[in-house]
Image 1 (spheres, rainbow, N blue to C red):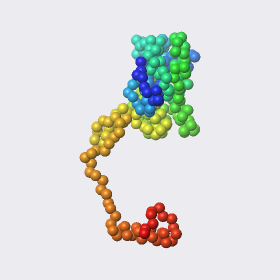
Image 2: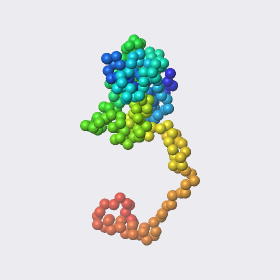
Image 3: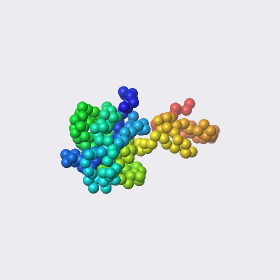
Image 4: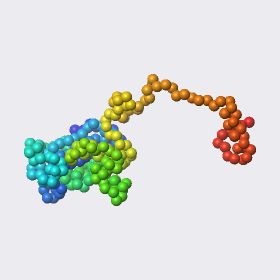
Amino acid sequence: MHELTDSKARRQIVLDTETTGIDPKQGHRIIEIGCVELIDRKLTGRHFHVYLNPERLLEEEAIQIHGITNQFLKDKPVFAQIADEFVEFIRGAELVMNNAPFDVGHMDNELMLMQSPHGRINDIATVLATLVMARKLFPGQRASLDALCRRGDIDNSHRELHGALLDAEILADVYLWMSGGQRKLSLADKDADGADHDPTTIRRLDSNRPSLKVLAASAEEEEAHLQRIRQLAKNGGPSRWPQPH
C-alpha cells in the first residue's frame, strides 16, 4: 500500500513493461513490470518491480530484446497474485509511459484475464504518453527511448538489454527533460567537494568562502559620470538616471 500524500501534490508513476511478445490478442502476456514514483517532479525512491510467470513460452525475438528466459520466470508469481498490490501502487496517479497504448493494452489484458474487480487501467489512473510528447516536440524524428536519450544527452550506456525497471528510470529522466528541462533524477547529488546532498533542499554557499569584493567608483569616475548625464540632458536625450542639480 502506498503512503498517503498531500492531495495537492502531483503524483506520477513512470512505468514500463516487458512481455512475451507484441500483441496480447495473440495470447502474449506481461513478464515484468517496473515503476518509479515522482511527487511534484521529484523522485521519491519508492518503486514497484516484479517479474511474472506468463504461463506460456516466450518468443525467441522477445528473449533477445530483454534477455529474460522461460527458466528464469518458472518460479515467479502470476499477475493475479500481485494485481492488488500493483493497482494500489498506481491508483490515482498519472502513469507516464513511452509507448502507452502497448503497455496499457497488455495491462488491461492481464486485468481482464483475471476478471479483476478493479476494471481497466483508465479506471485506476490517468495516462501520459511520452511518445506523443516527443512527436510534437521533434516532428519527423525518431522517438524511441534510445533516440530521446541521445537527443537529450541522457546517459543510458548501462542499458544493454531492455528491462522494465531500468527503462522506467531512464524514461523518468527523459520525461523530466522534455517537460521542463530537468535532466538529473538521482535522489542524491554531489557537491563540488563530493559530498551528497538532497536536491529537494536549498543549497547554500559555503560560509567560509571569502566575501565578494565591492569596488567603489573614484571621485574622477563619479565626476565623469555626472558630466555625461548633464550632456545628455542638454541635448534633450532620454536618461534613466535622476538629473543632477
